[in-house]
Image (cartoon, rainbow, N blue to C red; front, side, top):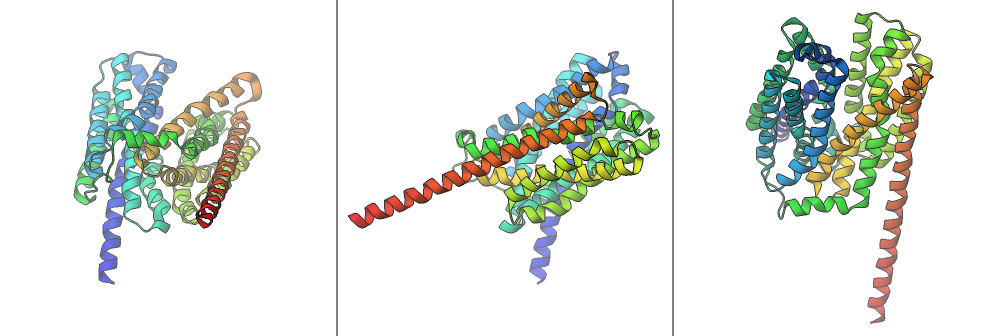
Length: 408
């Protein structure tokens, strides 16, 4: 009994160490949006131009996730996590020291490079510590760092930016990255790469149709959440007529919803991962559909924003699904999950912005988001049909081989 308790304690500390990294990444990703007016003024650029800095980070995630996962295929996973966080620290430290807008673009791109690869490798380490039926729960615990960042890290970095200066917001992210390196070195076990691991084998994940289906579910289905979150502050001001303090609380409730989702949903996903993903997409479609109706009242919009946040657990569920379908190329597939979600982070706000610009009102991203969730559900249905077809062909092939053997 004592041995079991000790093992659980060790696992908890490892998951905590991995979650610290999620906290650091979540803080820098979302806090950059909140301090955008500050660094725009500091670097002498307009707010729309400063928005390119956020795009540079997202581009870094999309490029870095597959590239670093493939290049690090043969490395011990603990060493790879530390190396990725070292790059994160360098990128955020340079961001804090950026002398001009163009250098800021370069440094934010560098900061984004380790994002997807870190979460991908951390997910592999987390699932290696627990039984098969607890894998999604372990990934959910690791992702808690990211969701808690939206509740604690982002407001703190925002406060720091206003109180001392915007450069300190990036400095805080760099400090948390260094703390992650220490925690991972202290608590994470040495995890050698799988036998036969190589960059070429990792690239083999791209040949598997189910990998692409799963990425498609995330890239489209998750766009709705980002469509609403991006314009939530505007909706609260223009439609709900909430005060600045109330708006901050509602934005915090979104993070609480994501945290609750990552605590509860993985338990169901470990029993039926694809069914849970499908139900989450239906959940998201319904909660996003309600958003325009809930927006005028502060209480109804707060409840709906919480429920939309719960749907964010889709990221955790798809992370496990990718590891299931990638077979022996899990590193790249797990990292690509974050390329898919950054695609959603670009697609959702873009389409939501088009709806607003088209005169459909501030709440129209809710309708757009519901359609995106249903689009993700369509890809989910295609994935299920393709999988059932492959299983049917495999059974028929097995029967044919059996009959041939009997004939001999």
